[in-house]
Image 1 (cartoon, rainbow, N blue to C red):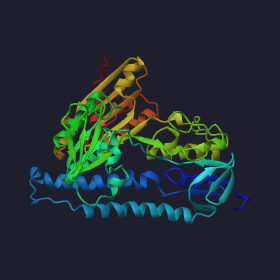
Image 2: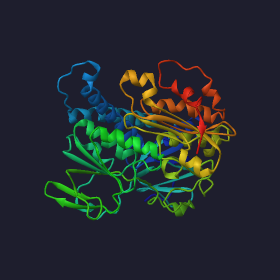
Image 3: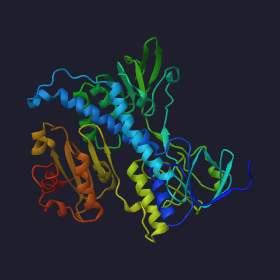
Image 4: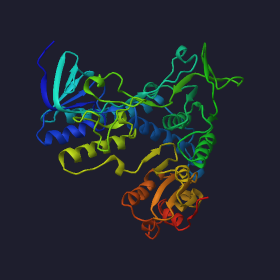
Length: 459
């Protein structure tokens, strides 16, 4: 055990979406940096999240379009899905990305990549196995992991999480998914399109609980139209192991759902429970998220927390934006703040949901006077031409300031169209900045001005 610590100007714990770019900025500014990663460089996004899942979504979309080819006057013959090829395509995209980040860190002058699990031994010292490291500034980018709910009988079966399901190279006969939010629904539609029987079981009264009811209802319709069984109000789940799989009972007295593969996708928790944070004076909240201020500084003034572990958003884009905020404050004398950003994210079922700002429910609860506009995708020429008319777009506007408060774009291209609205919201411009702008025809975006010209008071 070496007693003398190795000194760095900065230590970054975790090589997810915020850590490596921050290492790049710090080393460019002449600082020595240690990046510590206990598992896979790239974090959730690269290894288990956006990159592999959106690659699988693309394969599933190709299968879906091929099956519908006759609708467009195209003959394809029977459509088959080779899961081993789907998986190898996903693996290549993911590994290329991971290796790219690894190569960047390993070749970065002034940066040392250290493999292992980091724990604080004091405010400025971190131990990784038998190495003791010391730095003036320390940055946490430790991410999160899947939560496994306490369901009776669950431990008796070989269930999957978002990590394990990515290793499947065969098609499940019947995939049962516990959970009704983003990860659950993306895997549900994807595996249905690959050819599996799929059931979604959600304990609450509806899917996508954080969205407005009309969004939840339409998401359910989209999934059910593809043959996915959706069970809500599964308030008392239990699992019974069977020879060839399991039975999942949604609640007492309900018929069991018999499956061969079980995916548990009920949420995430931060990786903060095994870091020795108390030795550094870093506080966490009741759910384990690191407490941070508006510039992502923790309760220890020389330590910052970025990404999924700080509870300020659990997305790749929020994590990267965290890096930008920290770098701007530390290196650019640019006082950026978390509270300046507008909440935004997407649900990548097909068609996708693009979201920005507040839901109508949240606006209603705030008590402010508001206007709302809504258009079905059946009114979008581009969607009709493409044969993809599911969904709708909706926007809510402050009646007094005329600023846009939020939008839900559920439909073809919704994840891209919502950025139009997001930019105007960030610029704090009135909704007329879009409603009076000429858009290109035929696009999905051209319906946003039309929708904003037909606002009605929110009841």
